[in-house]
Structure formats: C-alpha cells, structure tokens
Length: 363
Ligand SMILES: Nc1ncnc2c1ncn2[C@@H]1O[C@H](COP(=O)(O)OP(=O)(O)O)[C@@H](O)[C@H]1O
Ligand SMILES: [Mg+2]
Figure 1 (cartoon, rainbow, N blue to C red):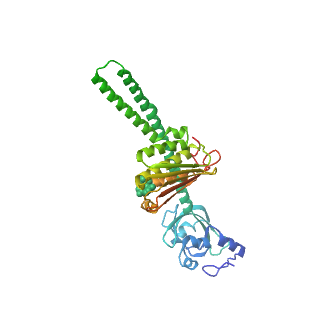
Figure 2 (cartoon, rainbow, N blue to C red):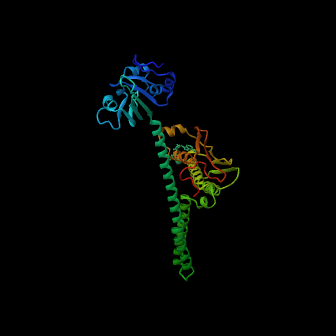
Figure 3 (cartoon, rainbow, N blue to C red):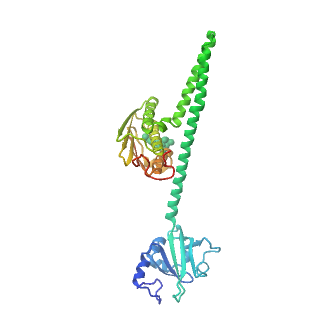
C-alpha cells in the first residue's frame, strides 16, 4: 500500500499501481485544494530536489513559478482547482536550490477522492530545450560555413576569370605595343608597366587560390593539399611531410572542404605559434572513415586554457566543421611537446559523409 505524505486517507492504491506511480519518468504530485502535497513520486523528488518529508511541509505553490496562462500571482486555488482537468500546459517550477526549470504539465481532479485532490504530472523540458538550442546553433553554424564557402568560391572565380583575365589582356596589349618602334625611354617605361601588371596578375591569382583553390573542386583534397603544402613550405620555410594510407579517392565536396579548411587552419597556427621547422600531415582512409593528423613539433600550448578563456575561434571552427559532418576533432598539446590535431569523419563507400545532415550533399 502507498504511504501518504499527510497521513490518513481512504484512497486505496494497489501495489501494482503504486509501482507505476513510483517508477514513472514524469514527476507526479497529488495535491489537495490549498496546495498541500499529499504524495509525490521519485521523479518529483529528483526534479525538485526536496526530500519526501520536506515536500510535506511546503505548498505546491512554492514549487510552481507560474503557468504560462496564469494572469495573477501563482495560486494553486486559482490556477488548478478551478478546473476539473488541465491538459498539457507549460509552467516554470522552482527547485529547492532555487533553479527554475521549464516544464510541461497536466492536471486532473481525482473524482473518487473525498478531499478533491488533483494529480499534477510534470515533465522536465530543460534537457529538450537545451538539445533544441544546440540543434539550432549547429544548423546556423552550418549555414554560415556554407554561405562563407559559397562566397569565397564566387569571389575567387570572379578574381580569376574577371580581374585576372582583364589583366592578362592588358599584358598582351602592352606586349603588342612593345613591338612597335619606340625610343629607349618609352620602351623602358613600358617594360616597367609590363612588370607591374605581371606582378599584379600573380597577386590576383594567389588571392583567388587562397580564397578557394580551384584544385579543391577540380582535382580533390589530396592534390589541393599537396599544392598548398608546397606553397606553405616556400612561404614559411617549414618542411611539410605528407603521409597517405589507404585508397586515394575523392570525397564529397563538404568533406573535402572541411578537411582542407581544418588543415589550413592547423598549419597556419603551427606557423604562427609553434616555432617549428617541420609539420607532418597524415591522411588515413579506413574506408569507413577518413582520419587526418596534423602534427607540429613546436612549442605546444595548453588547449584547456584557450577554451577556458573563450578565445580561439580557429580551434572552435575546426571542431565545428568536423562535428557538422558527424565527426570529431581532438587537439593534443602541451607546452614544449608539440601539437597534434586529430580529425575523423565517418564516410561511406562513395566518400560521402555518413552524417546525412543538411548541406552534406555532394556539391
Ligand atoms: N600549433 C600550435 N602551437 C602552439 N600554440 C597554438 C597552436 N595552435 C593554437 N595555439 C594556441 O591556441 C590559440 C588559439 O588558436 P586559434 O583558435 O586558431 O586562434 P588564433 O589563431 O586566431 O589565435 C592561439 O592563440 C595559440 O596560443
Ligand atoms: Mg588560428
């Protein structure tokens, strides 16, 4: 038989129903008019943080922080007992430690009960809301990353095909003029201008490649990263060793883009902070997932410090890109021990991300 918080009652509950009551995942309160709590199940104790005997000494109103439809100060008499039953409404409850939770609840009077008690069933929504917030955040991040890549692609193409082509035409024109009979001074002047245009053309091409290398779309991740590594070595004087294990194949555009951007960020970080003369890149395709290690042998850092300070957008972006594809990114580093960035992304036979999320299509 069920033991009641407030003692005597003629309400008889068989032990089978008592087990259901006690083990229900939702919090269940039996409340008398006026707010005295007669009974509460285990989930109710967990949700509120009160013990059974503590609940006996407080009114339900001190837990209830108002129903969404409540117009006046929360009062059990006003809110609950004016109704035979209330199906599914939102309310806030306050736990013993003062924290407030959003919950959904339903209430019904017990017709057989001489005291006119109500059963109030409460479901904690905070976890659901947190999950929903995280899902929304991920969706927005995904959209931002996609939009950013699209924009880079567009500007890169524009620079290459628009500005680049125009500069090339100017260069050809200058060469044609150069073949005309000109005095030495004019010729020297023309050659200077020609050199300036050539340099500008190189800069535009480099800018276009930095924004988004066409090799990434045309040839895939590996050729793009090989070419990036070569340029990186020349720019920073850091040796890049590339190790590839498993099949050499194309992955979906989103996977290739994510891998490329992660390598780029990790390598630039190594150049900026690691004070190293060597970076090792390892790409391992296990068929079920693609794994990537970016190791420098430099001065290292404490990753927990960076996250703790809320800085490090680059590291955050890397993690976010991997997570969006259902993968993960880990950073192992310690002062004077170098840094290793480890990424793994699950893929299928076609090199498509297994994580069937929006935006992970081949594109
Ligand atoms: N390879 C590395 N070696 C040493 N320190 C690093 C390395 N990568 C990152 N860090 C440290 O982590 C911090 C955060 O990196 P990141 O998120 O990329 O931001 P940012 O590059 O904009 O500073 C850096 O400021 C640096 O102190
Ligand atoms: Mg960075």
